[in-house]
Image (spheres, rainbow, N blue to C red):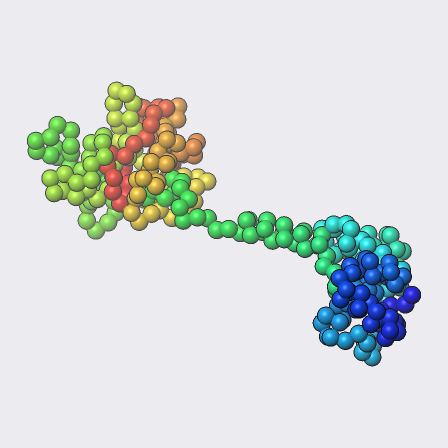
Length: 293
């Protein structure tokens, strides 16, 4: 039997009549002894164009023989292939036809078939690519979100009527020193004195030491961590940042301050360290907009 375009008007009308009687494509093909692809083409033409007679053929004819088209239809319907190229290779092996992927794609479209394997494969590839391209969440928390700066404490005084609260003026390379109210517990404001920064310290069960920057560092130098690039928050939110990173901030056996093993360092000048406290936690003496030493 020839292609759908070679059927008589009576045959094509019979195909459409069977389809309207709720017969499946397979049942119609068996009943009329026609290739299933031919039945499919006739039904699709009737659905799309409302006619059963073919238009005069224009353009190049099909490159595939009818038996090859049946092989292609079977492969496309019964097996899953990750790509059009994979389907083409298997079709060439099964049929012996030497055709391009473009020809296979054109034949499938004319059959009204979707390349399920290719569609699934492309969907997986798109999902994988989308996952890889998802930008970092603004809520991602690591130590790079702390604005750590080298500072010089230029004045310290104990606040009246307190045992352990101190008012410090700290030069962090800005036009005016910052005011820091600190001890070893979080205090944001004491007796109307706003605290504009925090002091980074190292604490053991017995003592507290202010963390020291490397030699050659100057007020305002930024302290960073190798492997944790990023811009710091303008305003430190302790519940979202400090509370989630402080457990990984410790001094190592050489008293060097680290985050997950990465040293705190001033680029080109060296690492920050405690004077004597090794393997101890790093703390902030206050909550504020910036961190200083």
